Length: 265
Image (cartoon, rainbow, N blue to C red):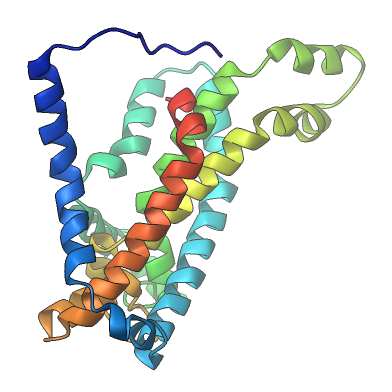
């Protein structure tokens, strides 16, 4: 794909403003690196509490990603391929968690799926208790992270060559066979990119998790919540080191997928 970057001499004011804007993003990260207790970093990362929070974060974020793939792939396919009344409204509701304050999302989940919630009361009667549980943390992360998968995959489905699917259908392949043998290989790179973005967002989720699932060590206290506890409880060194771990993971994901993500948008 040809580059869209134009080679021209920028005005000085544009260079200065761009540099200041970049500084706005770089300076906080530089502050973390500057204050990090590098001599004790390994001890902090390998401590029992940190390892427990990291392990729980990996489990819940991977489960949330799997949940997002199971439900997000059909949703993205319907949004990209099926014309129906109200599609724009459904798309807006689907992407709402991307711009909604996470605490508001957690409150909404609590009112919907809490023990006295809209759907939570019937679930509670049959023994399904989601709030303040590991399953609740997974659900909160999936709620916040799934739109990243849906948005990326929908763009990939819209740009896929439909002639290949039509050719397979004319040769007698069923819908399921076409989707499995033709559509999925076409969108596999986009699906992987969307899933990785979804996982990275779930790994860093904080607001919805603490509101809906609480902050229970070993059950719902993921790494971002553990960082918050350390920062508030007089353990800034641990908070800084573990914040850098999350920053490194997020940066690696964005750098690794930047071209595919930009094409999807």
